Amino acid sequence: MSKFGWSYPAGAANDPNAPYNQEPDPCNDACIEAFLDYEGPHDLYHSVYRHGDVGHTIGFSITGIWGAEGNVKSGPDDFEESRDFYCDDLIPFGTWEDMDSNGFVVTHIMISSIVEGVDECTSTITVDWDQFNIYPKELAEKFWKACDDITKEVEAIWMDTHGCDSCRVHFSYIDELEYCPVWSECPECWGKGIPI
Image 1: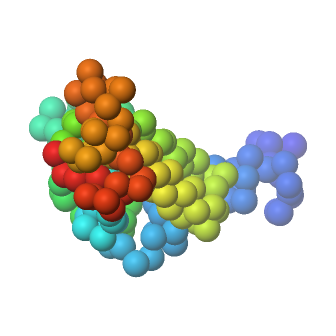
Image 2: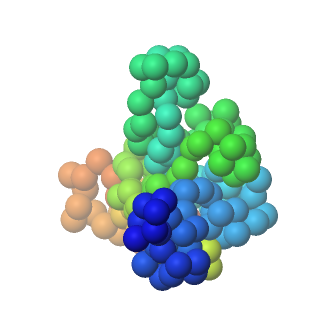
């Protein structure tokens, strides 16, 4: 102990105040690196929705300081909370860098879809976003795999429900069902089903 109080030698591994022993501040660095081609969460959602075959619904669980006016930091009554935002509700967050500068951090990405005509929803796949224990490549792989899994689920629901009149004749034994499966060898819809 020195006359100025307890101190650690410079570079001591057990110095709790050394920068290398501090927890890093949560940020969206992994997201920025994982999704370099997308400016922010809305751009990622919009690109996947626009270019995908099934119209994915993508939500982000975002932690930030929220005030009485929504996402505006307004005063002493502000509180930290995680909230979920989907689709066009992501527009106000701007870019990944905007989110960082405003103290908003993504903690989860949720991917799902709805099947048109039957209003049946897929399951929701949540990609956990551990800021300190996931690498950008791993995050991107998990996200794109979740999108592929949702696409497969949509296709399965479609094939179970979008049969045409010829499919219904082929599956006449299930005539009491509101929706008819697609017959893979149907000469009318070519085994692809029809929009309802």
